[in-house]
Structure formats: C-alpha cells, structure tokens
Length: 496
Image 1 (cartoon, rainbow, N blue to C red):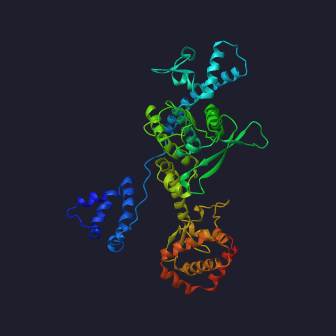
Image 2 (image 1 turned 60 degrees about the vertical axis):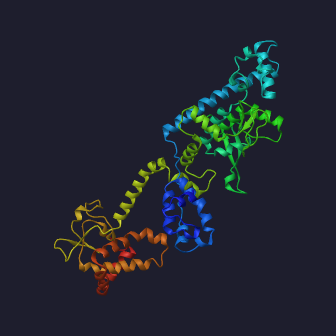
Image 3 (image 1 turned 90 degrees about the vertical axis):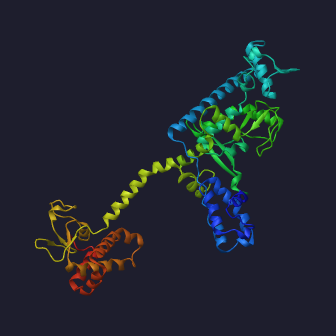
C-alpha cells in the first residue's frame, strides 16, 4: 500500500532517503481517519523507521507521531435489541433442550427395562441407545449413498428426528453461546476450550449447586490465561441454572467424545451435520468422531443471517453485559474504561443525567462558597452591625430563628444576601482570613476542611471582589478590637 501511495505522487522519491515530511503527512492523513487505516499506519511505520535515513530529523519526528487507538465501532445492545436476540436464542435452545430431555428419559427407561419389548417406544429406545453409543442412528450404506433405517419409526430423516434427538446442532450450540455471553460476558473464543464445569460443595445447603468454571483467554498472555469463576444454581432465575441446562443438553455429546477420546472434557459439544466432510485446520480443537467443539465465526455468521439479526451478537452481547455489570470481565480495568465504557453510546446516554446532577451539585457547592452580599463604599444608615459585616434586613434571613430574627453564625453572615461590607470591615476580615489559614498548619486536613474551608473560600472570593491590593493594605489597619473579635469567632465563643 505504501509503495502504491509513493508511486502515485507527483514527484515520486527514488529511495527512502528522498521521503519528505510533506509526503509522510499526506500518507498519515489518508489513513488516520479509520480503524483499518490506523492499522495500516502501525504496520508500515516500523518498516520505515528501521531505515537509518528515516530515524532522525523532521522525517523521523513525523514517523514518531502518536497513532490514536482504534475506536470501537461495535456498540452494546439497547433494551429492545437485547430482548429480541435473547428471545431468538432462548426459543431455539429451549426447544433443543426439551427435545433432548424427552428422548433421554425414553432412553433411560429402555435401559432400565421399563418398556414393553417390541412396542414402539421399546424400538425407539433401541435406536436411541445405538445413537448414544455411535452418534448415528442405524443406517445402511447403499451404492447410492447412506440409507437411514426405521424412517417411519423416527418420523423422518431430518436432524431433529435422527441424531438431533440426543445431540445439539451447531446452530443450537451457537444459541447456547449467545445466552452464556449475555449472562457471563465470555468471549466467543472461550467456548472453543471451555471444560465442563465441576461442582463444588455448597455450604449448608442441598438445594443449590455451585459450579467451578475454568475460563481460558489466551490473549491475556503467558501465565495469565486461566481464571476460575464460581456460579451457583439456586433456582430458575439464577445464573447457574443456565450452566445446569448446558450440561444437560451436551451430556450425550460429551459422553460420546469421552469414549472416543478419554482426555477430552470440553463443554461446548455439537453434532456436525456432515461429519465426514474434511476438517479445515484452525486453532480450535479438532473434531472427535461426528462431534465438533466451540463456536466459530462462521457459526455465528450463519446464526445471525438465519434469524435476520443484522450482525453477530457475541461482541455486542459481551459489551452489553460488561456495561451492565459495570466492572471488568476477563479484561483489565484500563480496557474496561477505554474499550467498553467510554466509547459506548448507551453508557454515554445513560450518564447524561449523572453528569447533569454532578454539574448542578458542583455549581451549588461553588455558589455556597462565594460572598453572597453586597459591597459598599461606606456604612449605610439603618444597617445593623455584626461581627463580620453589616446586615441590611435581619427579618429576611435565609436562616431565621424561632423568634423571626436571624439564627446564622456570624461567619455565615458573609454568605447571606443581606450582608453589606464596606472598607471599615476590611481589616477585620483580612485578619480573619490570615488567622484561618494559620489554623491549617496545626489541624488535620479533614478537620480543617470540615470547619473552615468554606469560610476561607468565601473570604477569598470577597478579597477578589475588593481587590488584592486593598485587602493587603487593610492588614496594616488591624486594631485590638479586630483581633479580639476574630479570636472569639475562631474559638466559637461569639454567639450570633
């Protein structure tokens, strides 16, 4: 791609040493706007920087510019979208579970000898036993192909009437994976190597079952691949009930695989439609007999196309679960914030009210620590004197007492809209400001913040309104009366 770009320039450079900063800026601007373009920049840059001629100078600085992270284009599901996907998955998996459960019950009755020999159910139980042992219903190989026996007994040759009586199809296993991702937030790749959960003791209870689920995530790097999650089945609405159903639906598949490959104990087992078709080499475990493991990207694609869902549900379902849980799931805190939370439109929309409330609270706090009164050039006749300011109307106090007067502390006077400050107050207030700051050196931060922080901020706001020069000059006019009143205010011995 870089070679084609260079060839299309008006004056193509003859060698790497002839590349200019302008050329590299043009190359960057062509690709920086998309995720795929950013990946191209990341792939080409190390090749260019490996040449000594491009290691320094303006060209080297241009190559060293930071390439922004890719912006996630997948978004979490809205409420209605999520419910639609879950309905499709629940309907498909539930139908498969009930089908397997019904045929398993019949097979167990046949093996226990509870069926009348020669009856229809007895003959069907015999077919199911053969299916459980081999993965196939009895069939004959003819020159024209395989011929299913007992077609009338089975009700047809469709998968639901033949091997599907005891095994999940790839599509049904995909539906189970969608439900598990929505519940636990597991990655699609987890299902390829997910061992069958084991049970752990449930302390003091026989009605619940706790499963230990081992999660393998190879992208975490060596030594951090595995983690264990405990999931409890305590009823129909509990997370562990889905694990119980998954174990039930895959029981015959896991048993067949264990007979053919005793070391295999994977949970996500499905019966392939065409088990004799050549298997493509992938990182996923190879099939055992007619059974395959995990959920491939092709399985997910066929599933959403078949159900007209507009895209693979796994990434979006995982994002939905992660944002719903509000905590990292098999990923770091940094990835949780930068990849899942901050770029998500639904999180942003839901956060607006929180941001608005926070902004309003911040505004209220800011307004609470500003000087609330007025500034006068001289005392106004009729205003009553207080220890910190003059009061324009004591009967209209924001903090009235039981007798209709003002019940505010004298320090709180400066927050009142009735307060009036003139130059005669400046020395006392400047001295008070200085005194409160000196307390900070002898009091714990928590205590000082609780008792004095708001008053100091209010005094500093007043200082800014009066002017720092006049405020500093007022300190030279502090008299003994000012010092006595400030001392009483700080001690809390001056009653309002």
